[in-house]
Amino acid sequence: MYNNHMDKEKIRLTDPNVSPTEEVLKDAPGESYNAYTTFVDGLSNIDLEQIWQYYPCFCGKAWMARGSYKWTTPRGANKEKNIYWLSAWDGYFSIAVWFKEMNRMEILKANVSEETKQIIRTAKIFGPKMQTFPVEFNVRTTEQLADVYELIRWKKKLEA
Image: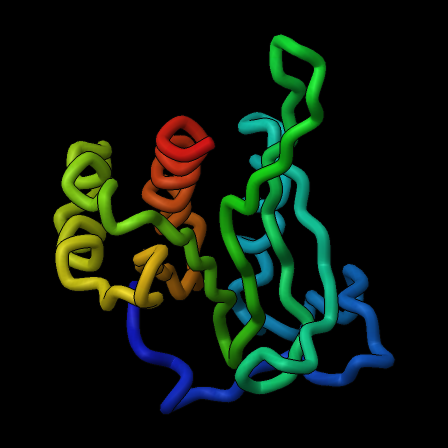
């Protein structure tokens, strides 16, 4: 489910002039397109919106999708929070859900596989002040999506 793809595989969707339309996406993740469409179809059930953008400073310079959760506070303020980052690679798409280090032990209570819990336990910390870590899934099949959705639900409720 997880690996350090940056060293081994090729990121897709690198042309800034070619937007990630449905036709383009059918080719980008290869055999994982069915899992991708299932994932996107499920976003409305968890109140998320996915937005594609080209990132020239990202390692590999590519189109990435940001999953956002938007809500209005009781006082009427509009809020938005990044929930996940998605990128297309040869044969799969990668979904990274970033958490604050202070929430690591809490997230281990999530209803996810032991493999995902091991990823949570061993994920590398980034940032000197606001310490965060990614839980990254290299999705090839729809069976992998249960853990992704579960961690998305946790991310929504843990951090405002």
